[in-house]
Image (cartoon, rainbow over all chains, first blue to last red; front, side):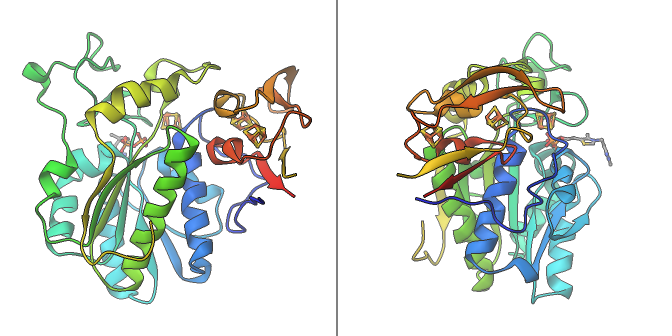
Length: 251
Length: 66
Ligand SMILES: Cc1ncc(C[n+]2csc(CCOP(=O)(O)OP(=O)(O)O)c2C)c(N)n1
Ligand code: SF4
Ligand code: SF4
Ligand code: SF4
């Protein structure tokens, strides 16, 4: 078996992400899917003003840096004016489900032909680990030091419960908690991009991702963040494919 | 047999790779790289080229070669 890094990654440059951050794993998975489908020359990544934006400095893609919360709707606009391009929006959970939730919902209602890849690390990462809509009940964050209390802070947002009955092309949740989940989730990315190529419409893939810095494991050397994902994050947010409208040969 | 190749200049010492390696081929090198991170060491003898480290490394430090 040979595994080599896709050419669209700037492999000699060091990224700005913290040690152990899931954004780097996910960016590599996107690059693999882009290469497998031969999309390198026709691909636009739309980033947010958050940790995901650091992908712009270590990839060769065309990148649109959208305002915080406007990633998915900016991607939809780019796709409308450049339907020849494959467009992927990569907001965090704070962006997609808090300040940008109305864009997420209305792009889904309009079945915009894009892939919204939401990196769910259950916190506002870039601004210092505050509670996000995704923070788990009891999760300690810098703005919920005693743990999230649903009675006081509201219940976490589950995109599958909200978008699950919408008329969209694809709704799935993957994870990077293990090599097996990375393989499975990589297939989901490829499948969703293929759906865009086929003109099927709105795809939302949420990927559970670690933020060791803001989860309290900044110098972890024992895989504690991965244990937290498997024991907490994935129990609360189950993985799977929830809408797969016209199916596909892949995944 | 396939083997992992490690570019430890890129390593940030998160040890995600070591935590998933089925052969314990990745461990603390005791060294610090030029960026100041405590880096891992790869024992090529133990490596079976399974690709787990390549898939988990957030800093793209691995490739698997034949
Ligand atoms: C309009 C606006 N509001 C707030 C901010 C501050 N801000 C920057 S990133 C961010 C949240 C980041 O969290 P998330 O979207 O989950 O991404 P992550 O960094 O965790 O990957 C916020 C609130 C901003 N840049 N612009
Ligand atoms: S703060 Fe969290 S999400 Fe942001 S780069 Fe660091 S580990 Fe990644
Ligand atoms: S996963 Fe990558 S960055 Fe992390 S310790 Fe291993 S080689 Fe270094
Ligand atoms: S390829 Fe597999 S066996 Fe070899 S170092 Fe990586 S995880 Fe360990």
